[in-house]
Image 1 (cartoon, one colour):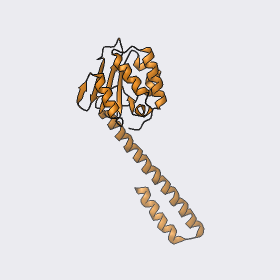
Image 2 (tube, rainbow, N blue to C red; image 1 turned 135 degrees about the horizontal axis):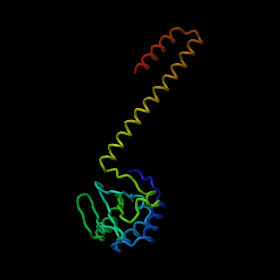
Image 3 (cartoon, rainbow, N blue to C red; image 1 turned 90 degrees about the vertical axis):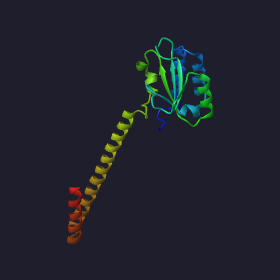
Image 4 (cartoon, helix red, strand yellow; image 1 turned 90 degrees about the horizontal axis):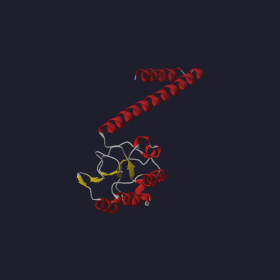
Length: 181
């Protein structure tokens, strides 16, 4: 997954988040501060609404929310031990970290929405990406075809201007084949 959200924005959001929200477990704040203080790690942090299917995820909840306080999932292993999550992150700094935060008004918080990304592991995201890829490929092919049509038309005009019947016939044939495709 390409990193589209700048590290500065992620850090600004986390600073603001930690100032405004009391987390259910204080170790979560320590973990978020650890991430925030390492730009290399922050490049690998992705904020998601739903972390299902991701290879490595932190789920963190603020006070006043009916969600589990903390969970760390790596592949199929799940723990509520923040220290294990910290050690895994510290030892595996090249792995992406997907964070699902639960706090009041999260869907209306502009800073949160600015750092929020799509979960690339959800089937509908993959289907949407594949559909986009197909449309982009079709658009590219059509653009190339239109460019070729234009160049052939220009070459035909030049052949006509030069009175070159043989080239004219050959290019006209190519143009007709291209129009049919």
